[in-house]
Length: 200
Image (tube, rainbow, N blue to C red):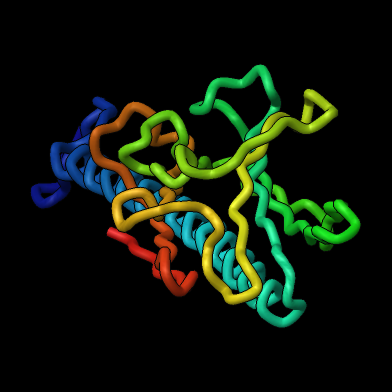
């Protein structure tokens, strides 16, 4: 058999070269980093959205109290009744208080907080406001208990809060047990009822 002097013989051995393996590993690492970044930013967006929603309802409660010249409550529902604070779901709803008739009536529907977000209520270091708010239970055990943030007609809070107990904090449910986590804190001025928010 004649062999061409410049023709290379092809190897029958299959497999990847070192460069190909390193390239595949690099691509996988980049994909994992992108997925982690997208997942983290989605959670951050949900947390911000829910924090802003609660803040809007707090501001609305104050505004309605001043415009209607009556007490208005924003109730924070923690449910179901059997759930631990870390596992509970949350909802909020505005209530109009008619002291002359002795009636309390809802304003609008109950707003359910996203499943991924929880108001930290198992550690008073993060949400001490709940220790100073009146609370109650819904007749339906599935709807759990509530805490009432009440605004007076002058726009001030009815609760006796100071600068160390006038805030609440939200976090992502998946961050339970972590020493460092993303959060959204809402603080209510005890004198004016005005709202501030804080993010890391």
